[in-house]
Image (spheres, rainbow, N blue to C red):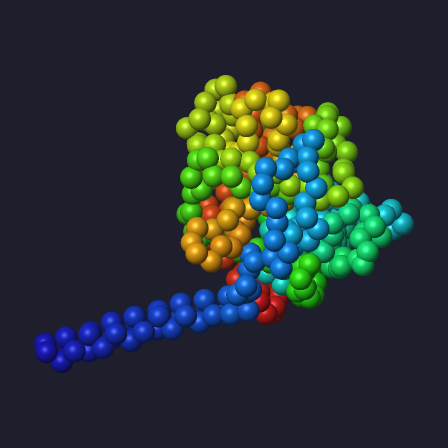
Length: 316
């Protein structure tokens, strides 16, 4: 019996060691070359209270993870800006699943970074770099195409055909820790080239804009006068109750980052939200902007990157 007990003990030790090695290997395999200096822009942003609607121009290249996602269904139709996104790794973009309705093939898209003016010829010198796409991963629970009342799981990953060359104008933003919830009242920043007028028709603006939007607690934003049962715990609500505040995330900003400063002495920026939806026309009483809460999808992000790497023989 004693020898059997020792054998069982050694089996358990070996099993636990195998688990530990497997976990370490997986962590290293997935995250070994992830940016160590994420969320630390070379050009510091203006963190006053600018606006997106009737908004204020961002300092050029102060949000270096901002992506202009551009689509062309076929040649010779030129690429057009359709959504925003966030660079989270030299090969990966984080964005919204609804951005790929109906253009859902990687060959339709390119991801452009280092932009300030939407017309890059106005950036002198231009730091723009555009990359082809070889993978689009939409959340399997995103059913908005089938059910227009359900926009949960509005999150997607885009894999670039080749790694991004990181520069002062192009760098990645950090992911938040799993399950992190931003306290109500915290001002985070939304950025994009969306409609500055807040009208029914979406009109892109010429320069990257930004706005500080305070987070609204779930209990308030899920009230019937606000978003009621459309809002889910996997979402973040942010903005102002009154439309005369003129701050929102607009149609052209879909998929773009909702960036918050991480707590601590060494301040870095984290992408806590992905622009998901808002009222038609962007500005409406008690209808703040709604973002997919990134920290609710930490496992989904890690698992799908791991799966893509395994299935495609990629190195990330």
